[in-house]
Length: 202
Image (cartoon, rainbow, N blue to C red; front, side, top):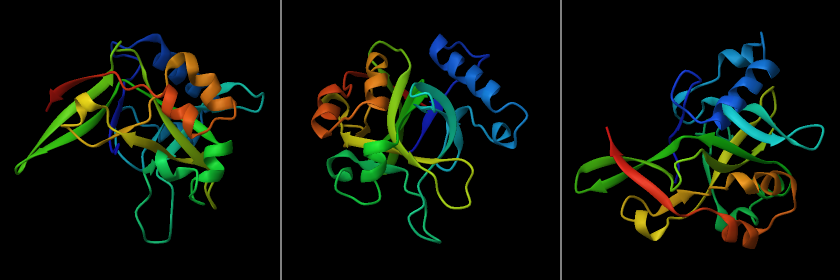
């Protein structure tokens, strides 16, 4: 699964990708209440974060989205969708076909459960560049801001000891196709990144 990730702020040592996305968010949402809700740093479910999605001109653009789809009243938000079944489930299939997004991050976090101890790991791409977590989104009633969930897949073999699931991660040079083109399960499985680096953190 993916229940936590990290988005660095502009004043941290970060690559240009996330800095550029945050600057675009700042311009798009200038002087709006939505901008005040944006979360940088360690991100938890239900928080509002920068994302990439297709804009009105048909090109990728930066938007704010809230983490977690509502499934039913008084139930917790759905923060992950299993890639293997998402194309068949009514809750996810329409968004997977038409409303895909990518969540830029420095890394995501996962916990290894060892006996009664949980060890926290930061996991990122092998090249240490920005990680783009594949998501799907939708607009829900009485919400001005879209909500998203993160797609997950079986974990790569070398990080399986931490957890048996990992987010679907899209390479930077394939973002346009992920966001804009027709994709299917086979395309996602072939293009998802699995070469990851991991580091135990506090």
